[in-house]
Length: 328
Image 1 (cartoon, rainbow, N blue to C red):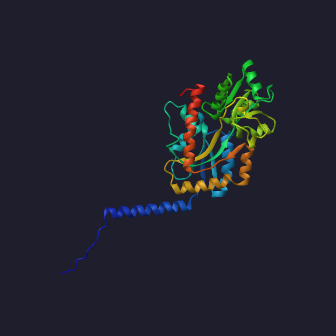
Image 2 (cartoon, rainbow, N blue to C red):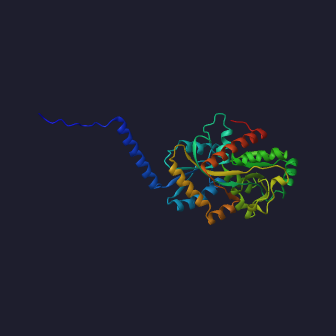
Image 3 (spheres, rainbow, N blue to C red):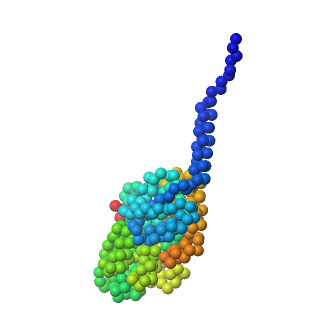
């Protein structure tokens, strides 16, 4: 009579547990080796824009900090919507960052009748990195040297205001300024911050109120004249420039910049990137480069950044209503 051997067949639960352990081990190994190839940094703005300038300053140094190249991928269009949609649909594997801003993340979506993304739900958040003042600049040939003189001239003759496109930060800040100053200028939208600033440099348009990083190099070179900034009071980074609020009490409209990732990116990867990002923007050489663009470093947790975005949505909804812009 033969001996019967008792064979134990693995249960489904046991197999599932093995699968989970294997996946966890794979994920842990992936995080440990991350990043092992270049990381794409999506910039939802044109080359030469303030967002592009700041992203390149940060990205170039962050590549050294994290040990892999950050490749800038400019995806301008529709006030930032194109880039935000691409980021939303990208693989959540840690190899796509989105350089998020006030305009692309909150203004543009508020100007959509049927929003194609929700900035508070459709992304994972790394950290805010900066607060950026807007600066009102004019062509040096324009016979004005102050905000008051610009207001008076705009009431006396037709002036053109350049923006980076419908829904851009320069569009909304310019519209808000015109409403607060009780003036009218012809809005001339361009395809990005670079072209809009170039139009003022060439004298095609007379003024723009745009993020400082897009214009400070030209201001310092004497190619543009800065009349005022959008911070509510004095700024150490713009010590020789008055605030618009000195002429229009209560005027306050600046922007922020930070970094997001596609929803579902593993938390350890987000935290590794956040640590690298915060280390990068606090390096003395990076702070110096950002300060030259009148940009102040501001960092925090993922939840802090989420609150910044939610607050920005609420504030910009009020500004859009106040200046009479309509969703399209």
